[in-house]
Length: 103
Image (tube, rainbow, N blue to C red):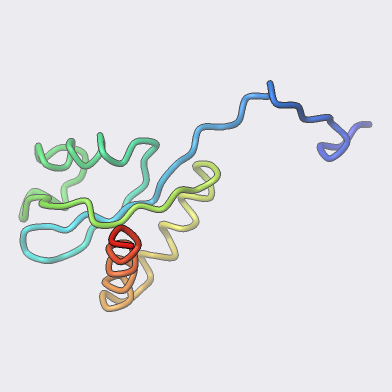
């Protein structure tokens, strides 16, 4: 029996497409956390009021944080962790992402 670690990997082996966990700021200041394989496209969907009931009461105004993940399951795990954070901790993530852009 061959284990996964024994299977040779070469440059031609397709790598799974990255997934992202993201935060979107709503007009009322709240933050929405989700996952997508294309967060910019997903944000555009949220701006049109589609894709999440969350934005029915307050429209999406900015994609404020994205984090690349290895695959969908890692993105889901990270989303669960972020959703458990207090808003102040989520705001720290947003601030760290903004600081990373300005350097």
